Amino acid sequence: MHNVRPALAVIGFLGAMIAPPWVPIACIVLLALRFRAIEAIAIGFFTDMLWIGAPETHALPLFTIASIIIVWGLEPLRLEFLR
Image (cartoon, rainbow, N blue to C red):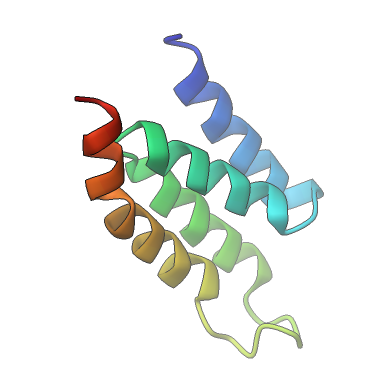
């Protein structure tokens, strides 16, 4: 069980580079549901830094904003699961 957090983080970072956009989002959600996940925000920031300037992103940090909303928004649910 202790290997899940680093594995999800690595999958999220590698997924940002070589996988479709849903892979880092899925890792962010899974990390936020189970852990107090600063890694989720780091994955979002890393994904934005890789894709910034792409024509479809319009230079907005969408993954960073989404990851912050997901981590903060799922905090009460995560606390309820872990009781």
